[in-house]
Length: 211
Length: 211
DNA sequence: ATTGATTTATAAGTAAAACTTACTTACAAA
DNA sequence: TTTGTAAGTAAGTTTTACTTATAAATCAAT
Image (cartoon, rainbow over all chains, first blue to last red; front, side, top):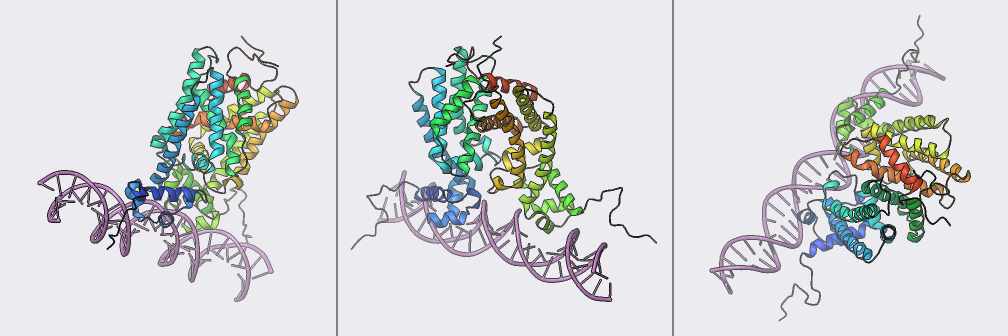
């Protein structure tokens, strides 16, 4: 007689199968509608996993969102980190960093939308694991800037932190319309323009008051 | 005999009393907790107005929020508009505009928080009346920039729209930490730094490659 | 193998909160 | 007086995130 096998030996079946199914279901649903209009019942139905497991595995609905987001972000940070290696010169490093950010926003619109619209408003985000990962990312830039200032490549009358905030916010805002209407996005062109402004300013004919 | 007058000429008689009480109640509550944790029952209790009138007057809970926000924003836009009058020179105008924005974020933390965190994420914001008012505001800057480019005061290889997005996003991000933790904010200092970056760029020693 | 503990799963239920509905009152115009 | 409209009320309904009680499977150690 056939012993009824619960596990198929071909598929390695990742440990808590339900956990992964839930994450995949949410990812799938986020491509169609925004987080707040996705119900836990829907996630359960789509994943084929019981609703209450969302709470066992992720604490709450938002915990699931963050788990999904964290995985993606961690990957991205690693990639950018790697991509920075071997680049010399503050401006070149900054350009690469900025390009990577534009590229990220262009690549995965679902995650971009979440990060730009869906995450910041909830109380507790700024102490969350997710924000921790984002900080890893932004610290990358802070370091570049601090080195640049110390090395004399960047002006000394602006702190790294301020520049970083302006750059990150500027990129976000530049990208926002396209992300919202799923419009096209051109990382190369955007990087070029952004760096022009960042490095040289908007003043015509260069700096006059150099004292 | 006295002809019964509908309108008392002394007190302009706030037309639908309930409407105003509801708006005031929400304003009051927003000073204590964030929008999503304020319940319609609470708004009703605080205002002394029946819960269902929220829906009659404002469509839904979010409609009430937007009504409150719109009133404040309209006022602010008028104020900035007025403050811009009589200023000559693109850089001076930009500086004033930027200062006004920092000042706004510093002045009323309740509204700043709403605008930065509570409004963007909801679907339909970008077609809302509220966004219309915000656009009035941002258009102000677009005009300044376009004039500056045409007049040769600003470089011609950057479009006004891109610069505007970068500036607005940069300001938001610069201000965000203080708004979230109710920390101090220094509009004068921030304006100075921001304009330094915006006008001259972050490069040390001015522009080298001027060709 | 048997036990016992831990993990995974399920079904049914709860509570809270946004939103509705059906009805009443006030009051001005026709 | 009638009629129409806006303001107000009380009592629902529905949806949805989250719980609980309980069962089945898995695994470790005897």
